[in-house]
Length: 166
Image 1: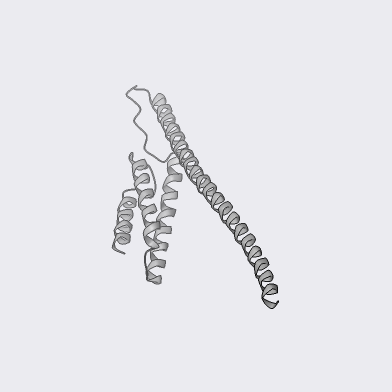
Image 2: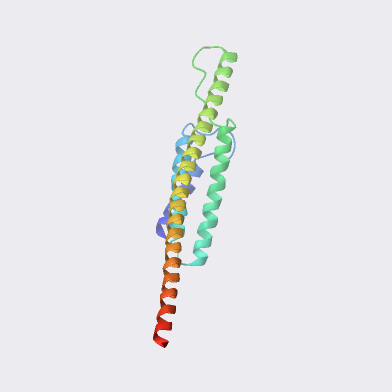
């Protein structure tokens, strides 16, 4: 339970560093990645809590932080992150275009990272499904073998019964 509390406190501190409105900090991607790791750990740790009330409270807290993380990701994709400066070109128009370009590039990179993560998860899921399919085939083959042996046993017992009765 103490590991759960520690992770919840760590998440609280992470999200306190992100403003509710306005520009996101430059290191928001690092914060997102750290929050994702902490949430994954929490999901695993919560299942080890024996007390149903404490488990329910921890799950609710975890869901709250998942929602906050989703909101930060959405803001990042929508261009809420602080972009690098205009680059010293002296032109206000060009600086705004550079900033817009940097924001768009940041969104594209974030979207690409999410796509890669989705592909990774899909690959892992496919592997697990293939393993489960193989397991089901083995179970089915074993079941057929047991049924065949049971039929043979029934047949032999019937013959033995006829022989025994005379």
